[in-house]
Length: 387
Image 1 (cartoon, one colour):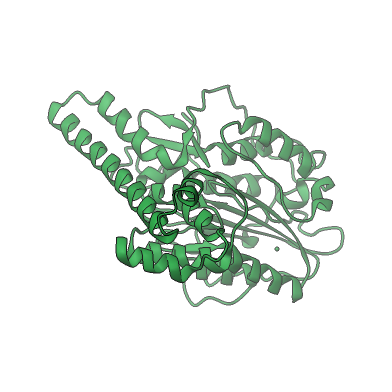
Image 2 (image 1 turned 180 degrees about the vertical axis):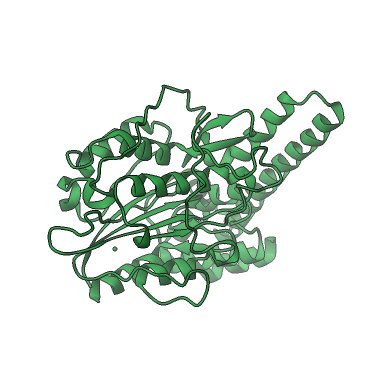
């Protein structure tokens, strides 16, 4: 199966291909898979991004029957949501929740379901809908959540790079900063990268704008993280309309300039609590919130200390190797060591899918695994001693 696959990953976002008239020049169809890989009100922005993306595609003529949505769906009517039934993606923005057809929600938002839907393997849960793509189809995937080297997070599990690549190869044979702090809702409404590509698509002429044009625009505006492009660069000259729809949006969209209030994705929970503390006028409430903030800092300190101890034990307390392990950043990943080590750490030490900060320190395991002669077995023994 052949197809065009465009992917954006940030906080995380995967872009792949789409349909409108409702077919491509070569007779192919357009498909979209929109995924919010988190849950909880502090991750409001991820589901807001997906809801907005749904309307971007629909407004540009994307057929609803070819859009598949995965999101936990615990935000619109969350007890912390002061505007029940409402999800917005920018301050004073429109409600992007109504009309979104969610295919897989709650406990069905898993790496397994994601890969099955992407590969067209029939599911026996949710709507049971999957991407039934053919050789000339375009697939657009927008995945929004937390990530770390070699993986993206789901509510209760993680999807590792090799698992995704295996799925894409099988298909071929048959392809984060938060922003907009809302002081009323006490949460962040969108991820910087996601907001930038969608607000561009809302107003641009997608028949004239190429993937490279949009990439350059989004990279310029996403100044707090690294926007990257991978894979076959030949599709860079293709119009965005081949992936996001070629019908001009009927909505008259205007986005006034607003401060992004951009903060690192892994620090969103801290900024939300700080804002609540500053806004509260009730001493008992302020004290309770302060205790919650102190606890989060304590957990972070424990995670960092624990990871340092694991690294030190794995390298035999070699000060030089230890210093490199906790300081350098590299794109090199020894997956044979790193992947099982991360899975064991998440199972036995700290659930990385429930504590976003833990994702931030996984680079240490990545560095340790890159040391010559290192193995996951050595790291696992270290974890058994430390955790």
